[in-house]
Amino acid sequence: MKLADNKATLSFSNGKPAIELPVYSGNIGPDVIDIRKLYGQTGMFTYDPGFLSTAATQSAITYIDGDKGELLYRGYPIEQLAVNCDFLETCYLLLKGNLPNATEKKDFTELVTHHTMVNEQMQFFLRGFRRDAHPMAILTGLIGALSAFYHDSTDINNPEHREISAIRLIAKLPTLVAMAYKYGIGQPYMYPQNDLSYSGNFLRMMFATPCEDYKVNPVIEKALDRIFILHADHEQNASTSTVRLCGSSGTNPFAAIAAGVACLWGPAHGGANEAALNMLYDIQKQGGVAKIGEFIKQVKDKNSSVKLMGFGHRVYKNYDPRAKLMQQTCNEVLTELGLEKDPLFALAKELEKIALEDDYFVSRKLYPNVDFYSGIVQRAIGIPVNLFTGIFALARTVGWIAQLNEMIGDPEYKIGRPRQLYTGSERRDVPHISKR
Ligand code: SDX
Image (tube, rainbow, N blue to C red; front, top):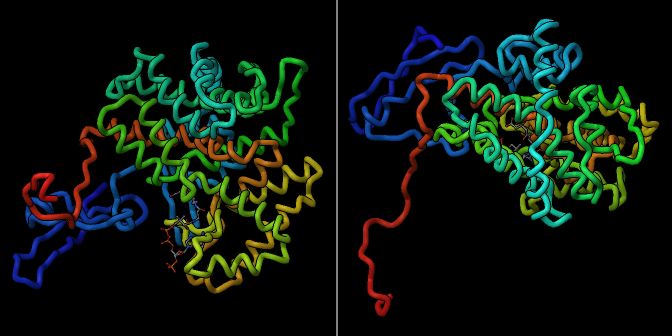
């Protein structure tokens, strides 16, 4: 970051002396006012619950322009990566800063492929869960538990440990997500198959059984790979900020990623794809397209807590570029599977059309986000609704790790410790219980 050619002056109407605050510029996007010395100079904090106007860090990984609806991974537009690269190339890019050449891609793919198995002891963790446990509960447990198997690589301040932990997490998430799925349906786990692609291997671990050969459908394999690319990273979103804050204490990478999984689970964040599909199911059950008007009325009614799940975004005040790519992927998969007439897809497109013509959504700049169509395409592939967020976590793991490693690699990083505006009781003495 570089010092901008202007400064911010903070003056107070009560006569407190004004102070000057440096302004810094990045390469693209908004400048920042450096308030690190504010408390020392004024005895005051800034106040920004939800961090609507706060840059918690500098980063070179992902850039989002919410007004333009632009998303860049290390400067490359998501639209180009989704068409010209596969997920492992995108992982390499996010982790190392540049796209791999053919040799680098081959070596990286080999490395990840040969870390896809998990320790045989991992399967015994699943047995502690009921078969109907939510996969995100299982994954939060399994990923945190991974740290118990890799004492040789949990020193987050050791670059080699960070490197091998990144490979292990990227490689093992598909295996763990597939195990959570198989456990829930009572089928045996399928071991990774090293001659398959990352996404092809995941499809086989999910849908194959030991009873017969499994043929990966190349259209579905490519669609799933693109879904992983679209979810790989997204700047300082809630779960990435969770991973950064958790990792800032120096805890091991597996524990920090487990914290990210737990945060992503929420319906306001990664849980929205599950919630969006359930919302479409509900509208379908109530009468489908004919009932959209009634549903939109509920959404606009402030007394109802009904939201149009898969719509709106803290940063995008335009169409989420990932939603467009997800809709195209939806089309491809449904056509491949002869489901072009899928009523839920038709319902989703009609719901989007009506919402985008309604002033409530237009005035609030609410557009479809990455979660609006992702559920429809995942359901068509055969992924159960309660596993959608697990797929999101699988893909976002590389973004979380890249962001965590960027933070730990910054010599200036400190443990994150926000302050507060205290509005509780002033000092008082404890009365004897007889006097309470
Ligand atoms: C992800 O941060 C990221 O980058 C996240 C993510 C990533 O890749 O990591 O992009 C992934 O989490 C996408 C978002 C998935 N969540 C959902 O689809 C859930 C539904 N969306 C909302 O909960 C909401 O839009 C948020 C949480 C996404 C954003 O909320 P904000 O920025 O805090 O905005 P807000 O809640 O203050 O809303 C502003 C107005 C409010 O109305 P008013 O009080 O001004 O009258 O818009 C309304 C909100 O009620 N609103 C919605 C709405 N989203 C916002 N109204 C109906 N339906 C919605 N979906």
